[in-house]
Image (cartoon, rainbow, N blue to C red; front, side):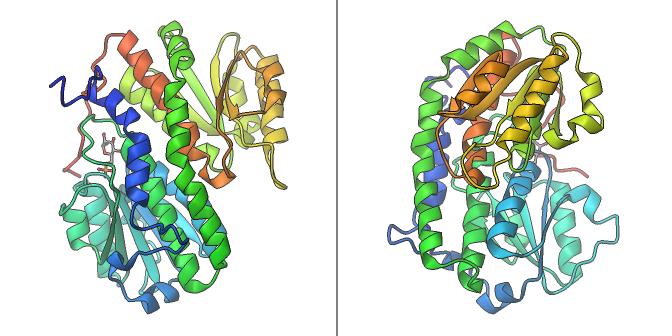
Length: 372
Ligand code: G6P
């Protein structure tokens, strides 16, 4: 078993460390060095994809957060409205679905019953289904009209890590493919984004190589009763995923909030010593939300919060307001979730390990939920 874990203490730790490879493998053979995107494997009539006027992402758990991240990129690149819905909510609300709706079903296992039932329902309504899946030949990709596999390799730990980054990567490839097909982006733009994606694995590796400080912080916080996570734009689903990892692995109450929503409610939760992780967007770029999120940090800090900040390398402005700052390498805004998630996974895994919990098999959870 020790060999299977690649020398790591748990599958979870191994899988967190597999992430550079998971992203690289998912890009391999698709993002050509010439900057062209090759997704002929989809074997779906391009005219069908051109006619799509709405995308609905269906998924559960961590896979649904990957969908929420992808929504920002696909809408930005393709100008197609994207809804993201939990599979089990979707089919019981009389959703508006027709032949021009593309369903993107995201599932690591391909066996999640809630997602499978939602897929079948959507197909009955005439929609086409494209599955993003990590398990070859599993039920959801078999029933789908098209499939884009994530090549993260087998994920053994119950809570998802490397599949999440691979799902975001695959969904981004799909978004770029649609943009290429529909002429929303110039080939040079697609080439640049693919080149930036190609640099992500090495940047994840840099975060993994520099994990000692966040692990130390995790061990020091093992008696935390509640941890909040704030993020904005693509950082919002990252915040929710960070909170989910902490619930799943360390059984600590945790919630992710949209930073802009703070003043509409969650700020009431802030009291002396409350730990809050804040995912800060890059200060670069015209529409940067950096200043807004930094002012959120000031607001919670003034009320006693203990702030742990994830920021982009070189962002010295956050230092004055943070108890702890963890830097991630520079990357375009839309790609930042592929980096910002990693310290949150390491934090949850280390904290749960410090509490003596089995991070591979958390209580009450199953890797794949095959009942409704
Ligand atoms: C279970 C797992 C989660 C996973 C979710 C969706 O709840 O414990 O880690 O995110 O199912 O699974 P799927 O295989 O459909 O991605």
